[in-house]
Length: 399
Image (cartoon, rainbow, N blue to C red; front, side):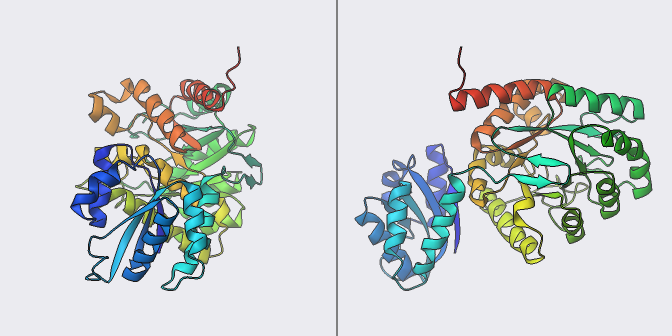
């Protein structure tokens, strides 16, 4: 069974989720009125298990939406959407502990999930520092490339790159993210030798600065060179397809960013398609995290990133941000990089260098939804926006 909290804001989104479960049409409006409660989707229940779950949930004042033929036994299995309070959910699964059909194991899964939702991700201790998540962290972008979509060519010269690093640190960057290979849609790979040539002086400069930094790469040789020079995070956009990258991170006690992507940068925007985007995104992380854990890389050193703009349509990107809270179920830090992305331009008809306000709106919404790290180009403005958002949320904005 796979458990996923559902973050549905609109009536239309709730209806879509109910139709996927194939609930009785006459009950859809009744269930939609309960969308403001805590929603948990459980996939792959047997029909008897779905029946028992619904009956027990109702006895505690909650409800469960199931396939319309569960009551007749004409289907063998059903997905289910629990609707109620977290307290009702805890009481429901506690009552399931002695039930058959695999329901006894549901209690442990639910307790673990609720525990993750109710607290911040654990701090990550790194060789040269510590990542804590009691406030939003800013990851400043430095691309030493001629062709990145936003700042390509601006920092190719070593002096310009060094000045930009110092500027971002002064503006409040918690992490500096450096890369020498563009991953914009349609981009081609860059030879390792050329990447290292571009990065060499950057690595040397970062060694003299008191800041955590990450290497944005898909290549193990580039990652190792950066880790040798003090990188604390391997920021990998290839969807975890190369185990060598997280194994390297483990060798150096570094953190690893697991990002979702459909395809590769070269082809990722050539007609991307999803049948159920948020479910597929969640399943990707569930599967990949199991794979990473099986290879003995510490799960608590993984940072997850939904990959805004990487093999996604405009409405996929907006759904990833709007429903980011679903990913909190993994209990891991969430990184989000929407800064100046093309979906913002398509939404508002804006050129790349006119997307500051849209980028800030995305960052604030992402933070409200559970993002812990914001990867951005406009460090100063985002730092101020995040500090204000954090103060408002914690009610610490004293006069």
